[in-house]
Image 1 (cartoon, rainbow, N blue to C red):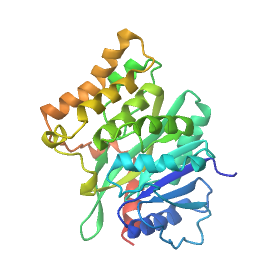
Image 2 (cartoon, rainbow, N blue to C red; image 1 turned 90 degrees about the horizontal axis):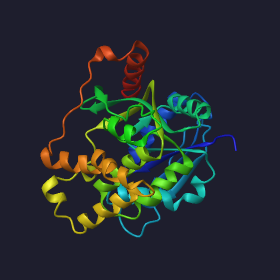
Image 3 (cartoon, rainbow, N blue to C red; image 1 turned 45 degrees about the horizontal axis):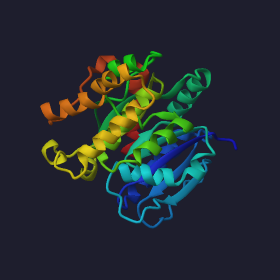
Length: 305
C-alpha cells in the first residue's frame, strides 16, 4: 500500500455539490502527489461522484451503515467506526466535513513530524474561515488546538485553549480508541467535548506553523451547539455526563481525577452555564506570516474560479 494516511470525508444531507467542490480543490492542490486515500461516508444512498482524472488518490465510497438518519456528530462518529475494517489498513486518520478543506501538503507535513516524533498522537496547523456571499472571501482565522507538548496530562489540560481536535491528523490506534468510547453515549455536544478531552489525556499534540484547514462559515444549523437551557433538558444528559466523567478519569490516580475534570469537563459545563453566547475569535492579521497569507489568498481565488 503506497499511502498510509486515510482522509475521512463525511457528506452532509445529500450535499453532492460540496463533494464536487472538494474534488476540484483537491485536483488543484494535490498536484498528482499520492498523499492520502479518501473514504467518503454518506448518510444516504451512495451517489456516483465524477472524479477528476488527474486525481491519483484511492477513493472509497460507503454509506453510514446506520439504520436511521444522521442527527449530528455522534452519529457521524458511529458511522466512521462501522468502517473499522477499512480504517485498520492505515497508520494515520484525519476527519473533515464536506464543506471544509484540509490542504494535502499540510497533511504531509504533519505526517513527517509525527514520523520523527513518536510520542505525539496528533498534529495540525493554522486554520481560517471563509464566507460565501456573492463570491467566496476570507473571513477570519479559526481556532484549532494549540501545541500541548508537556508529558504531564494535567499540564496539557491546563494549557488547552479550546478548539476541535478531530480535524487533526491522528495515529489510527488513538483515533479508533477515542471513537470506541464516544459510542457509549448519544449526546452530540458531549461527543464533541469527549473527543477533545480524551485527546488531551491520551498524548501530546503539535500545531505546526502552516495553513492546515479552511472552514466554511456559517455551519449547517443541524450541527450547531444547542441552546444551553434546551440542552440541560435533554433526557439522560446527567447520566451521560457521568459516563463521560468515568471515561475521562479511567486509570487515573484518585488525586488526579477531580483535578482533570475541573480543568476539562466541569470547566466546560461552567462556561456554558455562565455564557451561552459564542464569541468570535479574532487574531490580528499581522500574526499571519507571508507564506500563510498568500496561501489563504490563493485558496479564495481558486474557490471563485
